[in-house]
Image 1: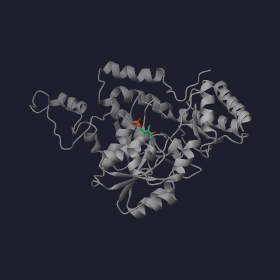
Image 2: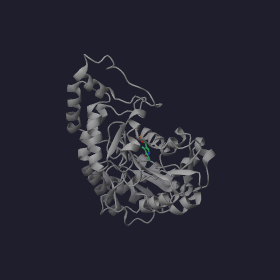
Image 3: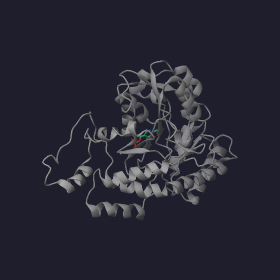
Image 4: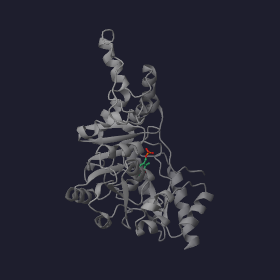
Length: 381
Ligand SMILES: *Cc1c(COP(=O)(O)O)cnc(C)c1O
C-alpha cells in the first residue's frame, strides 16, 4: 500500500467550469473571479469577499486594511503555519506568540491575557486542524481591549462554530484554497468580511495598486470605446502587490465550492472511523477532542503518542504517508528573536502525527492504517 497524506479531489465538475473560462479566452483576473467571490460571500454569509492567490496574501492584506502604525504588536498562536506570523512582519508589525491549550492545541485564553500589552492592536486566532478556537472568549477579550480580530481559516473552509460560519466571527476571515486544504483552486485564498468599506480597498492592493480591474475597464470600454480617449487610464494611489486570484483558479473554486459541504462531511466520516478504530488503544490518542455531531470542518486527522518518532518510521515503512502539524513557530531560526515562552506548544508538538485524511481515502486504506497503529502499540508499549 502507498497511502497519500493529502490529495485534492478534482474531476469533471472542475473541468466543466474550466471549459467556460477557455471558451471565453479570459484567464486572468476577470468575471469568473467576481462570480466566485459572490458565491463564496453568499455561502459563508458575508457582504464582501476579495479573491487572492493564497491565504498568505490574504493574511498580509487583511492586516494592511487596518493601517496599523509600524511596530505595533499582533497576537498569534505559537502552533500554526508560518504564514500567520509572516503576515504580521510583512506589515512592519511584531508577532507576539500566544501558547496553546494542552488538550486542544488551540490558542490559550489565559496565556492571551498574560501576553497582551497595550501595544497590541490585533489577534489572529487559527482554527488549527479545523478545531475551532474559543471565538466567544476571543471576541469578548478583543472588544474589551480594542483589538481587531482576523481569523486564519486556512484549515476550516465551510466549518461552523456554534451555528455561525468560521471566518465571520471576527472583523475579517482569511481562507486558503491551496491544494491540500479543505477545498482547492490549485493555489488561492479569500478575504471575507461584513465590512465592505474595510476590505473593498484591498481590491487595489491585490492588483498592483490599480483601482479598476482590467475586466471592468474592458467592459466599460465596450460602451464608449470610440469616444473616450482615456479608456486606457487607471491611477495608482496605494502600493499594491500582484496577489490577484485568476479566472482559472476561480473556475476550479466554483466547482469545489459546490462540493465543499460533502467533502467536509466525508472528512468527518473518515475521522469517525479513525476514532472508533483507536478507541481501545491506550498510547495513541486523538490530537483534539473532535466533536463530530456538528458542522465542523476538520482539515486533518491527527494523533498523539509518546513514541512519535518511532511510529513515524514505522508508518513510513508501511507506505502510510504522515506529517507533523505544526513545529512551533518560535522554534524556527528566523522567529527565535520573537520567542517568549510558550512551553506547552514546545512540549506537545513532539507527540503529534498527522495521518492520511483526504476525502477519497477508502475504507480499506483506513483499516490498513488502523491495523498498523494497533500492531505498533502492541509491540512497543
Ligand atoms: C496553509 C496555511 C496558510 C497559508 O495558505 P496558502 O494559501 O498556502 O498561502 C495560512 N495559515 C495556515 C494556518 C495554513 O495552514
